Length: 192
Image 1 (cartoon, rainbow, N blue to C red):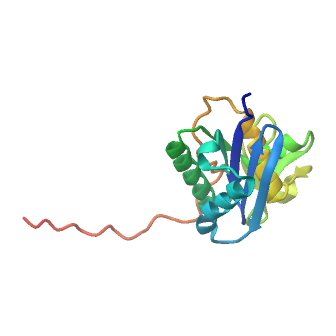
Image 2: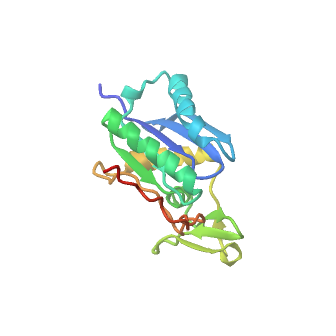
Image 3: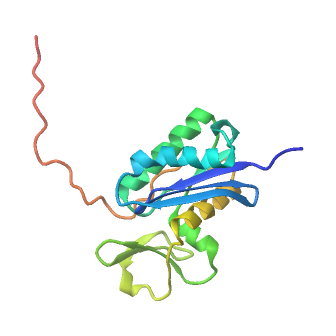
């Protein structure tokens, strides 16, 4: 008898660290912790706890799903880097899932909407690319579910993704707030 595939999905694109473990249609474990900072330090221990709670090892996994944003630049990079590293070391596929896709998967109507700083929001209509707009301009916003549910939706979408899905890449809708350094680089002196 062939067992149903095990999918681990996780997300740190907002002020949370969330993960879900899915086997077939059944969510085995779903966890989330609210945190403004510290996702890089908390993500791997949280994933270990999720696997331990289900009695699963890393080698039992068949696929990884990861939140690619839009959202916090650093948080997105944390998850995507972790997912790509795990997929490479475990030799399993990894799939990037946007928060906007996950929102759309849970509802039929409305506009998937992820709140952003400065009274803005990331949105995506059914036929357009994601964009950043004023939050008051969104007539029918559908906001992200709680982080644990978001990770579950990402796991379900990862399970349905084609085998040849490209590796995950961050979904950046706007440029970074940080600017490149204005100082000239140091002069390298030649010892010769």
